[in-house]
Length: 109
Length: 114
Length: 244
Image 1: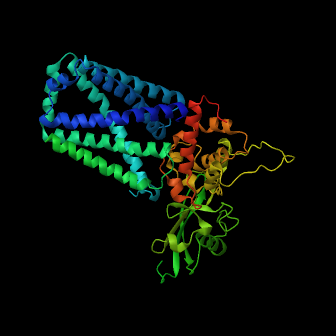
Image 2: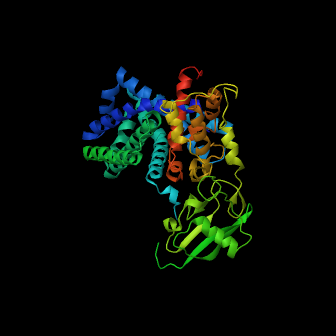
Image 3: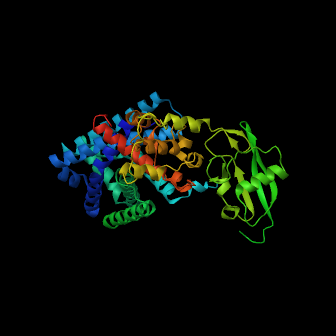
């Protein structure tokens, strides 16, 4: 049960994330070279507006994208009514948004 | 168990890869966010967790995550092109290229990690 | 096909809405023989009560589609030698549709979705008006022509796993039909049709598996048509929902 608005939200968040994911992968390959440490990660991210904006946008986009993607899987795997499906979509989206916001705050602030 | 014939097609496998990688990434995300959130009150706690990532098995698991992410990214780009650009009959070639590129990227990550 | 095969081992699904099972028949092999010929031979020589559907026998009416060795096919234009595995042939009613009896499915849902996708021409002129001049080179007409040769055989509907997973989904045939009408400038219901096919069971459920395109006997590409509908709907959304 995917209508126009869910579709657009799904595809626009995907288009936003394409460069973000590429950046994320590049950062991972760069950062993992000498092993991971909290100090190294925090040195890069703490107080940085641009990393904050990067991960902030990433978290918003991925919450929308994952919520709608899981909705499609749940819809096609279990027979839920439209209301339960909406509830599920919102719950996943909000949960990811909260956890993600906390993670971004933790590494940027 | 026999897989039905219409499900053995290249593009059906591409679609299965997209779904399974997306599902796995969505399930991994809460853990990812939780671990980063540790830095909020407890940088030492984050460090203790990151120590783990020195183990070869964990490095392998990270590589699998990078592979899943790349598969979902490049496979997703194919779908966006299919939907928003004029039709191309070369979908199977694009799907195979997406998988090849994903392996290239994740091997790059693995070599960088070890 | 092995030239030495003298008799085909044909399993035919027999039953009704409550269930059924395969029954085996030995059918004489011919040099040139379609799957529909095989079914007809069984009904005329071995199993007079076998129920199946056909009409034109030349690939125009779209009534004889069945599952043949696990894949949906128009049986009147499918040569046995193309699909035979060893000497085995397994014939069953189309997937994704309820069975009435034996090889005949209830296609009500299929045709209801056809009209549900506003797959009906809404004229903008009467017989008193002059015939609308439409150039065959007109870009919209070119798109419509590429998708227009559908015979309603439901092979694509039967091949589509999105239909299997989501019974509300309109399916490839109905959406392909909607796409041809959106590209018909004589049709007067473009915005209404666009609203219908953008709804909960509409084009946005398609995952572009392309099974419809793989199996369409007329080599149409409903996946491309559905992608076109997705673009039209998205564009009309950003234009404020006032499309044509």
